[in-house]
Length: 196
Ligand SMILES: CC(C)(COP(=O)(O)OP(=O)(O)OC[C@H]1O[C@@H](n2cnc3c(N)ncnc32)[C@H](O)[C@@H]1O)[C@@H](O)C(=O)NCCC(=O)NCCS
Ligand SMILES: Nc1ncnc2c1ncn2[C@@H]1O[C@H](COP(=O)(O)OP(=O)(O)OP(=O)(O)O)[C@@H](O)[C@H]1O
Image (cartoon, rainbow, N blue to C red):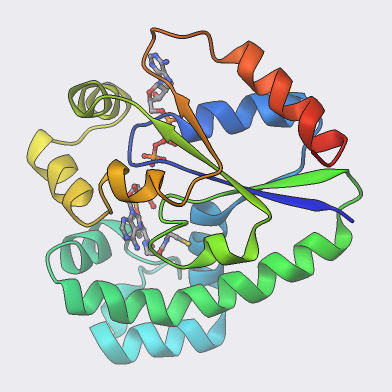
């Protein structure tokens, strides 16, 4: 049986960085946020639903979704965010199971920003929550991309607080520059490879 490991953490916590190490250790990684974006551009069903909701202009001339516009709309309207989630998540879920069928490894990693909020965690055997102090996360995201503090705090407010996620996580990794992460990942890798 192939073990399914879910990795999550709020914006800027460092989950992509940690997944990069799991990839080096040989684990196939399903990047849900990336796959969601691809599916939004490729699925005709999602395209027509999104255009019905937001108008034709939600897709750019090159047929890709206008991410900036969409982010501005959904992160400022909880009902719209919920609607978009309900359009995209079932397709991502379907694609995830198809993808799993093709993997040949003792375990796979499913990386998602909203693993718990979306309920996707129920499809996993075990979950890892990546945490870091809020101020540190904001600093990292501001250094990574051209965005402002207000927008980052707004996105954080749309995600569950770490205390809630901690209650559901199998493992918690503190990516706070105070503990060495790599030895913890190697230990987990060995555990997962032996189905522990
Ligand atoms: C609105 C979109 C196009 C903005 O794209 P953009 O490149 O600016 O941001 P990106 O996708 O890299 O997300 C950055 C961060 O925003 C947060 N975020 C993204 N989607 C969501 C969501 N549905 N709910 C709460 N937070 C979210 C996460 O912390 C994420 O890491 C994109 O986030 C999106 O399509 N979201 C809805 C689909 C979805 O639910 N994706 C994630 C789970 S499968
Ligand atoms: N321990 C660390 N110390 C300093 N910078 C870090 C650390 N971990 C990650 N970073 C940097 O912080 C930024 C955010 O990390 P990463 O992209 O992995 O976060 P994420 O949780 O995947 O965020 P998002 O939800 O936005 O996708 C990146 O630029 C990354 O290089």
